[in-house]
Image (cartoon, rainbow, N blue to C red; front, side, top):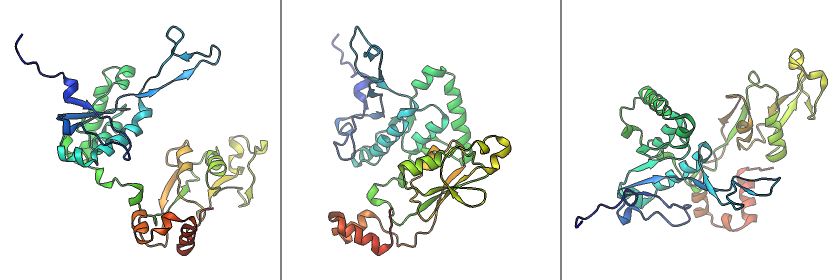
Length: 299
């Protein structure tokens, strides 16, 4: 009685209510926050029972959103972390950021540190594996730091941030293509289906004789003994736009890699181009004319 109480911790370490870079910027540092932490769970409705038509979990016949967490939210957390770490107000304040959201391995932990977090928090992985996962995280992270010559967490924190850019700051002349390692290819043709049905139709199925064939199942090519007779996916690099969809759907590590190739165009960013020639951002005809001028063909 009569003594002044310190404010509860939640007022001093604040979860950043951070929206997209077009929306409001975080005001926590200007309000005296000593630290920031992100992200918490993401509001979600997990499913609807198709037999009962009830939102699940159902609480007395009613449902609401829950908190989605775990590995699936890590890319969202990393994006929000980089937005905070490139915010002028946050940088001026110098407040430390504790990162969380999908950390399940030491590799996840290293990524959060490289993008600016100076401490880490883990919940879902501990729920699944117990506290023993902390030993795995610390051992793996320590070994990785030793391999790279990092002596302290401060040596790692924010190391990758200088690479961050906006879309407008990316080099429009950069060109990469997909390359398929036929020695690793298992002939599942997932890359062909993805590219043909939802991307740029630049992967062909080519027979051992070098003939492009139509997709389809042939009983004569089924089985290990005749695997060499199956058509193989081959990228037409002249038509590849480097979207990397094929590499993302491929189930074999290292089978499809994205390789940078010369584009033959001068380096220029979108911001630079539209500052020099604003009509390109205002007129589709001007955009098409520019593409023809520099030899950009998107089929």
